[in-house]
Image (cartoon, one colour):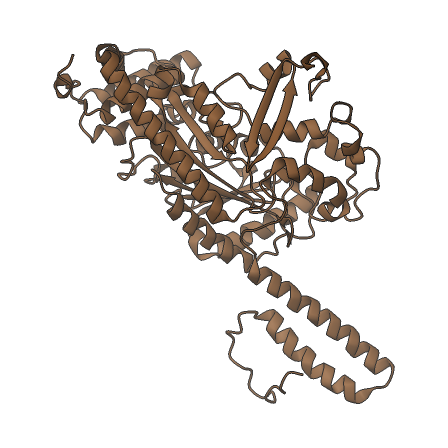
Length: 361
Length: 189
């Protein structure tokens, strides 16, 4: 299977009907694994990297869950294809930018992606729409166990799975949720939340991981520690932190409605107006407008089917996806025009917001 | 005396003091204005205290002499990695490094994680397979030794055991059909 075919196939993130959760957009779990007796990718000679790449690709190709996958060296992909995979959260920016022997294996519905020779020999990831920690763990645990039949993992009884960076030792597991927290952002509570979450041993990042900004009020929250606890214990702890963030966000929404609903509705109404009529739209403005629209859906101002549309556009309004739709290289300004055109069309038939459910205004 | 605190990253006077409590253990990081900005500590987009602690623990001037085990030491026999490489990269060279530099790793982990011992999943199949491979190697050595010292009775016994171990190593699950024509396996000693 080719990457181009993959992009045309329905995927968990862009075509799922199951993203009904108001606050958690998606759940991800990744496992860091390395082969015994081989230097980590950052300390490998090129020939060793090639060998690791070949062995891992072969083992993945032979595993049942990864049948009919894209199984490719990074070098075989165009720059644009790599960018699109980054925008779909299937590979990291680091892997996309590497000049060394590295690879990726992604299954058909794009719930599983495996990076080879990123920071570790293997970075296995499962991605699920909505709040699905348990389901994601069951899926990734199964694949990991199957790979273990063909690959000798570097493991130590005391340190657990051995990883290039000691911050990943033990389980090698990072579980995260992508959360949409517009009300906490509007009411300036995010800093407080970040601090509290940090104190509970969890980390908050922007949409595309470390160092990225939180456009569209989307944040990633994940476990910080990996050693000294079982996977189940980490997931349980993370799950309860996420649950309490969801509650805080919903409370903040209530408060915004009580305090000044017209201010909030003004933002949402304007966002709708721009999405339906814009002719120039940058990707960060698009993210922020879509974020407000999604909040409007949660508040019942727009019909439920609009949710799948906004969730899909969160991904498809990204630069690489716009570029691919244009089928040739674009200047950023031209890209903004194309993005606007695309979004205008998508929103042409979305009904006006119905504010009557909230009679206070 | 707050004025005496130095930035854990660059050693300038620290004005930002962070405390995190993980599992009842308190972790502190002191930073100057510039490093705090650079690390996004003030930015709700988030920062990772673990990263800061890791980097701080690699800066011996700022943290004190005890963690400068990283100072000068032997290279990893498997991959040639040295403690100063770790200081530069914050990553190790190969799985064996964790054994080579165990003395350096242990104090780091206390600040970094909830515990210092793995409590999660174990790759049982891989470990079982590895122990079978090791057993084959052991038996091969014993067989060679018994032939060399002309202990032929032992050699015959070891040869049978080796054949069995090889079969098992090739098929750790034991799903394969028993081979025809071989004598039934002798009971395990």
